[in-house]
Image (cartoon, rainbow, N blue to C red):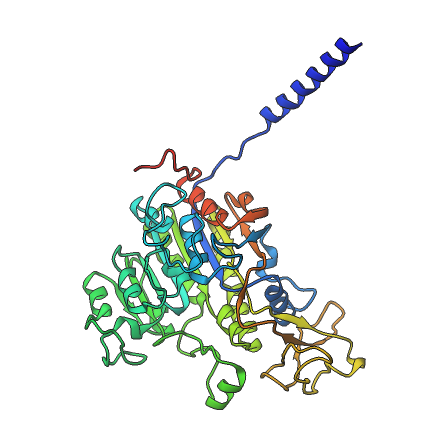
Length: 444
């Protein structure tokens, strides 16, 4: 009997092993990558965006992306990331200390692919066209880390100079002041560089077409090989709280600056014409900065713009199916929370100014124009009901909560389930080069 049971056990294990061996392995597909980084956006931010922009029963472009993953954001020395360390993990695929801007201590990291290059610089070396887009200034780490390394995140002028070294094909965002000599007049303001360099003129000499407004961007001709667009002196948005903006009569976003989706359309037109595959990184920075200054109206507008960029990417993917569309933040900013209750309770009522906080709850409440203003109104639900809501804030910091990754296209299966922040690099690398990163086989 024992011998029979042993034989049955061996046969059963053999069957399991055979089935495991016959499971199809993941087959990498080579293609282009559009990485959209709505900075500081956790699940609650997307919930706010849905209710405010399409209603509780509606679908954002973000909702329609088929793959979903939960991203673990911890760094080597901290459970919560910074924007610059999070971007470094995306660009190099390895964990670094929290205070890292394309660095690992005093050195540029050795990437998961075995190179002391970001994945974007590797793509350029392989002959792919690349571009970066940011609604903030161009030294913002979500995009700049893919092209530059710096011991100090705040060395904005030094970082901007490094962006041009490898001649990436498209660079679009704010930050004109960091490109011009101190006191020199530009299209949007005056320069702050202490070294006397005029990076805009250097870019023109290097073959870049330079544009400064939405209209100039739209008029960029096909066949333009290198494009630099600078649409604000610093950021294209005004990241202050509602009360400050109201007093200054300042808009949320500069009216002359294109949205990230408008920048994206031009970038995709140029990049897709220059090489078979390309790599574009787009950051809507306003979603993080408006959260960090507790401006709920600014956050909702930034989320609308980020979702518009996702829709543009998906339109492009419909024509070029070998494009990976990847959407991921690296943190959840300021603990934004949608707060709502039946109007009969008399607290959150359409047209009635909100209290500073809820009863017995110290979290500050925002309405459509800041504290003590009327609630936001959601877009209608499927029954046509229009319901009020407020936004509460937990802190002024970026949190270490897990964030949601969405994706569509080749290799997007890598981004399903519970994933590490290093998986972002892996998915990008695998798509651009047609195989997984592997330090053991990388070129020294």
